[in-house]
Length: 265
Image (cartoon, rainbow, N blue to C red; front, side):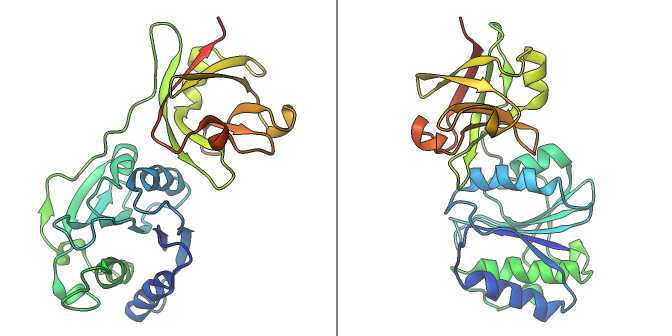
């Protein structure tokens, strides 16, 4: 199985990359995660990939192309995790959370021109000529060592770990904003439980130096339309939302901002 994620939107690039995979491995099963991962936004894509990957079986091949540095000295890599899954993409921090959550078994540079779709590859379409081709070959059983030399490191993004401070408040960061304007955070359900926050409790949210009251609920419909809420989403992380509204616009949040969640004083 190949899971495909990019920031290409509705571009024909998506279809071309799938064609390359199918030419190499006609029996490849390709599932789209999303092609709206945020233009050039490896941080947002990093969070989305981390959450999506948990719902795919061990051994999945992930084709991940969010690559603002295409054609530069950044390396095209394959990260194999301890569960046997393989993540193909640019070495730009995209796999930061994957490495943390699944562990690193090995990292390889994709540098064998015999496994490219076109040689020399296009300077601006490594997604087709290098990454999609690698996904096709991997799914067809080509060994990892055939792609290139092994690396002992890769690039990691500076992502804050959520924690409970000495005042009992949770401090973390916004992860990304979805198409509804809901704000995903990196605050896991276990931190909410450890902090002792309870359902229907009104909490204080601080972001960008501004404060807002937010009610902790299970579902959107437990607050009035237009009211700010917080709930644990399907990935078990805290999400900030407005019932039938856009929380990101209301709070001027786009992703990556530091947040603090506290009891009302």
